[in-house]
Image 1 (cartoon, rainbow, N blue to C red):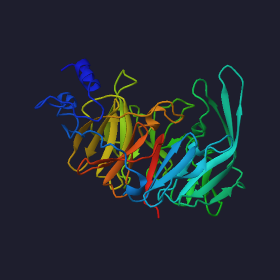
Image 2: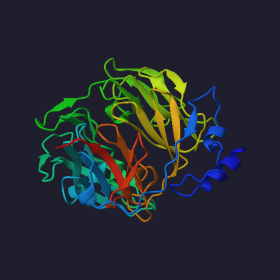
Image 3: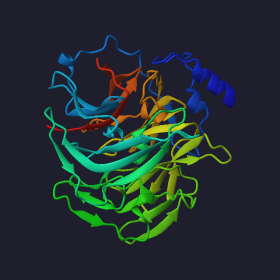
Length: 391
């Protein structure tokens, strides 16, 4: 089968249906080289189980945090309505916020935005303070404004795309008490308002994709145009170059290994998924096929991960080193302020690793891993952020 016939076959699948000829092999499996990558088999999802389920019948644990153009909010089975944690606005940059690992707190920058009338249409964001909100049904906030390194300004060219406060960079929580603010000058304690200065050779602003134990990070020096490199935080040194890696790493929960989408030679748009050890040594190629790789998400127990290739959904079993093609095309709502490719296709895992959630036409779909059972929640949003076991 040629690459073009594979693509044509995939495009003719009805969304959410396993429209396959009886006895035929998966298009992805036909494109598999057993010597390079995990074996692929079909585990096709059935039709989406409409109608949507009202809130009174939801049965999931914890809270699913999500966002739209109005801000960041939470939905829960034990609370009758959704509630906002932060409202996006001209001085509230909720989209640049981040959740603590346990999901109990949400930190987001506040400040000001100025639009510059020039050939590019730049928006300049000034951060005056950070607000930290609790994520329970009655959120309370504390404001961190007395730390001199909180304040900073960033410019973002919004031509054709509208203002997007995510240009500030995402707030990243080191643990359940400390986070890195948009200024990336140091590490702030949300409750003591103390600042740990960053006095290492590699500036914090160039680091991303931190390991859960905060000992490794991806250095992405956009100013010097270096290739991505793996940085050892404890020893303050670069330990591996990752020239083929895309600009993100996806860490196993124990920080022992990470996934990365690696670029196919001479093709900027297509990637394959590979597994590395914590020191940047590639261990094995995972996907025997390539495509536009998005929405990589690892379960909290590290036993599974999901990913999307050319808009189709896959589930990998880490213990068995296998990939399930779910024969399912992702569909997202149009016209949304947050509907920007990977944002709309983001996948989040339940705290117990038994289910994961994704959006289909703006509605959260909860899928049970063992049974492929799906539930569609009667709730519209633009993208999912995190699923946490909060009280």
